[in-house]
Length: 104
Image (cartoon, rainbow, N blue to C red; front, top):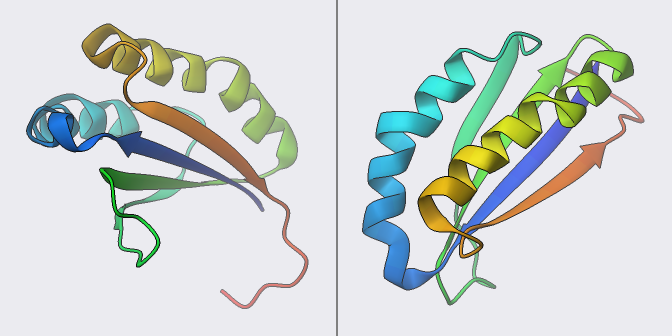
C-alpha cells in the first residue's frame, strides 16, 4: 500500500466559496479518480490553525508507482481546477506517507 496526503488550505475570506466548490466539484473529481481505490476527505481540526481552514484528502494506492502516476497527472488536474476557481489563494500541499508499520 502507498499513501498520499493532500491538504488544501483555504483563507478565511474564501470559506463559503470553498464549501460550495468542495460539494459541487471537488467531491465529484475525487470520486472519478481512476488510480484511487480508497480515500478519506476530511476537515482538519487543529488548535494550531487560527486563520482559514484546512481540508485533507488521504489517498490509498496499491503501490508507489500508482501513487507517482497520480501525482504526475491527476494531482495536476486537481490543482488546475482549484487554481481556475481560486487562483493561488487556496494552497495545495502534498505529503508522501511511507508506511513503516500497519494495522489496518
